Length: 394
Image (cartoon, rainbow, N blue to C red; front, side, top):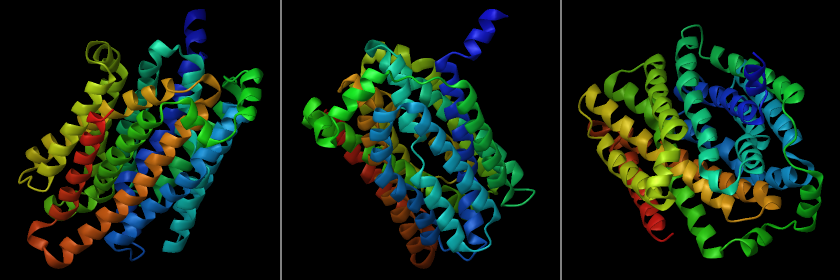
């Protein structure tokens, strides 16, 4: 009993729970938001922009929050970011116009430093030789959140398309309470002092190998851009091509989350030991490229599910190893900033991917209805191929 209580209160378990609850809320949005935005007259392009505004705010503020977490500690930044998430989801669920949806997504994006700060927390408490495996813990929470979140979003959409966002706001509020009462600070005062002495992002590149860190950021950017293009357009694609509902798409994304949880939570340590981070990243980007290329040609539901599973495998093989390599490239006092840079790179990609995907899907709807989805997923395959090139250059 005492051992179980100690495990439940261990920092690894608590940060896993923090990310898990956060990603349930994030996962709830994916199958519902494009259809919810349609209720307010949004085109596919506008739906892509709605996803992109969140990432635009993260692109601007993730490095700031990362630097702040190096200077004042991880716990207060996590707390503020989760409270912002709760406020954004609540406004989204209560919105009655499209512009309020944009405001809600902007609020969530400004305070959305949850993941990079959680990764920095793991880096604080994990030895360097186990860093990629520790990042896999975040990836497993990410994957499990994607199992539960889209499934909940799909089910609650039967009540109303706004109900999933109210539920996500309640989850974020509970998450904030858990952080406040249970999560200890991971960054000692002396490291915070060192971070104040080394304040600029340029110092992070000076500390790391410039070219290597640049390639890591490039792979992260291209992989995330290709995958976010997929997630921004997938619900509209499957609704048009296969007649899938929000609930059905929710279960498909839940399956992707299960794939991610199994790989990053159960298999990643053994895979890193056997193959190394670089080979995993190359394999993941190649798989993502091939499956995106095949997606628009899926003629049956079985083919669609097989290709979608392949995308989940490819994405899962890339993310945690890249974050582990980035974390190991700098010292303890710069973890928040380098992982904030990674998050900022991903946020920029989540601006490009959804907007490009929405624009190309809109083009298909107007000019190539018989090949709906071909343009965005062909473009996504090209972007993923650029990630392959950068991975080979690591």
